Length: 135
Image (cartoon, rainbow, N blue to C red; front, side):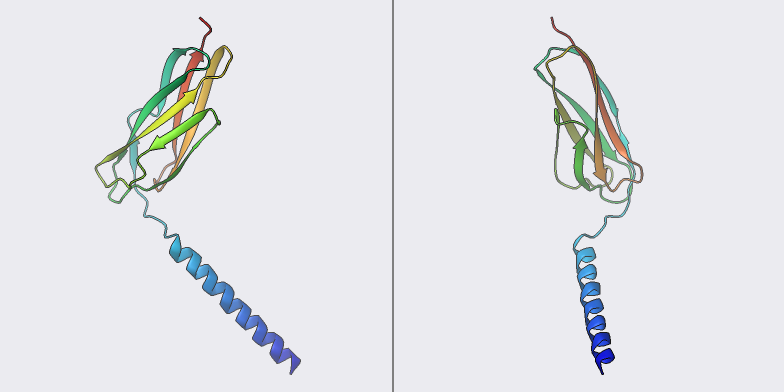
C-alpha cells in the first residue's frame, strides 16, 4: 500500500514538472531562423582622444524569409554600449545598431566586439577598433 502512495506522489510530481516545462517553452516561443547581411561588421573609427565618446553604426539587413528578432546585444566591455530599434525587422528591411565607445584614459589601440543575439542562422559579431592618442 505504501508503494502505491509513493508511485502516486511520483506520478503527480512528474505531471507537475511536465506541465511547468510545457508552459515555459510555450511562453518563450523560438523564432524561425532567418539570414542577415551586415553592410560592414568591422568599423575602424581612427584616432580618438582619451575620455571621449565615439559611435559607429552598423546596418543589419534581413535577407531571409522570416522576421529578424534581436533579443539582446552583448558588448565585450562595459565601455561600449549598444542601441537599436527594439522592433522586429521584417524580411527585406534593415535595423541600425549603434555602438558607442567611451574611450579610456590611456594611449594605444583598442578592439571591442558586440555579439548580436538574434534568430540569424549565423552568429552576428560587430567589431569596433581605433587608436586612442593623447594630443
